[in-house]
View (cartoon, rainbow, N blue to C red):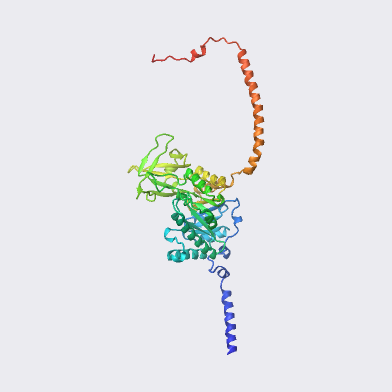
Amino acid sequence: MFIFSNFLKNVGFQLLIVISLSIPASFLKYGFICPCEEKEHCYRVNKLDNLKPHNKEVIVMSEDYKEPRKTWKSWDWSLISSVISVGNPDITLMCHTHKEGRRYGFSGKLVPSLLSSNGSDNPTLTSWVNNITSLARQNYVDLFLIDLLPVLSPDMNSTSLDLVLNTTELIQTHLYYVHHNTSLVCLIPWQPPCYNKKCDFVTRMSSLCEFFMLSADSFLPSKGEKCLARATVPFPQLHLGFDEYMINQFPANKFILSIPWHGYAYHCNEFIPAKSKTDYDKCFINKKDGACDYGHCRKKVDMNELTTTYDSHFSDEDNHVWHKRYLAPYFIMKNKTNNHFMQVWYEDYSSLHDKYVFVNQNKMAGVALWSGNDLHYVKKSWFSGFNDAMWAWMLHGIYLQKENPHSYDELLTSLPKKMAGIGIGCVFVGGFLGFIFGWGVFKRSSRKNHRQPFEKDMDCMEEDLNL
């Protein structure tokens, strides 16, 4: 009996070895079989220093989940640090992103029904978190973007904010168990949450989120006397929102600015044309239940549609208007059948460049391009050059802007010397100009004046026909 028992143990041990050898190494390491052609493409990317050759994050958002075009094959990967799929992850994009040595992730939206101070008391939240962690594990993601827009607002109180932070912390904990290097990126509105209540949220949110991504779609007002169509990212609001975050001591180097690579076509319920060259056309939208409902009256327009569907208007430079306050262009279209107007706001070189320079000058972490799929990738056409220019504009705006190598303290130290030099220069220049002026007056007074009194005035006098 003892010999038979030892025989079974030996057979079982040898069988376990055979089974272990038959399982791929990628399965033993990650718990799943790697779906990529090379198992190295399932390795998570952890060395962040190699991802930012110019010390700026460039996160490209992808919205072509299971789309046959696979436009990401034509992206300029030399500029990209990370790729995030909006919604469900894409295995093929993950493999290609890791092949390029870049981080990959996907996004999920936190809605009010998921908020809970204790995750075990909310089965809906438990199910959602389990699904997120399962997708993160199966797709070998390096980061996860949590969309906090539905649950954050300027007028929220500290209690509701605590619910958001508790739920976010729960998600972060689960992602840590998937892989300890999985990062959490938080999508936030342009105006700080709990702003009107002055809640303390900076310290805790900074510990939860690796980066804060300012949403480009959060600038539309929900209230107002009239709902006005306007630029996706109006510059006055961008300045105001960023300054408010800075006043709350948010670290600027953790901010990612969302950059729209698309525009919007607004159907005007009321259109008021510009009355002067300094005025702008106004496209008003009807309210719905007392709030501005832009969903029913605007349509996203990517670069492909701008240059194809709207080509006759887009190519006519005389039809374009540059809004000096919003720092963005638009053009007007009129339907000759029903006489309805449409206002199309979009992005061009100047508007994009201004945003890139804003990121650079304010020492922000980088940009998030929404989205890489908005470009029309067609070979052997002018689109190829246009797409190259789109990437190049970002390159010049963020990377090639020369920054002042001197710190603020160094500038203050050198200020007295500069002022002294300027003062000495003014003395010499003033003396020289005084000499020239004095010599001119002397020469003029030494000349004989042969002209009669008031002769010059009479030459310029005209007869008044009303007299």
